[in-house]
Length: 75
Image 1: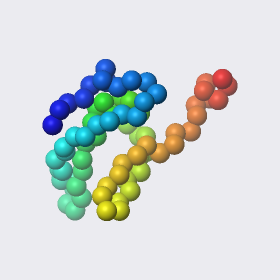
Image 2: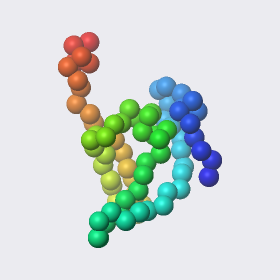
Image 3: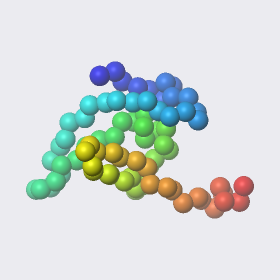
């Protein structure tokens, strides 16, 4: 699959991305997956931020609404 870099993403547009990931073992009964760096950068995510995992016919991962910081709230 093609790799997507941050420079491929334009501000204000949806980010089209399709990547393949390999599951890895976490502990004794869980599996984990990494998120694409371009998606993390585009959504300005950092360790500790929350995402929602929605499981229907497929799996959807989306960013939870982040509370505004005090600097952003003052603007």
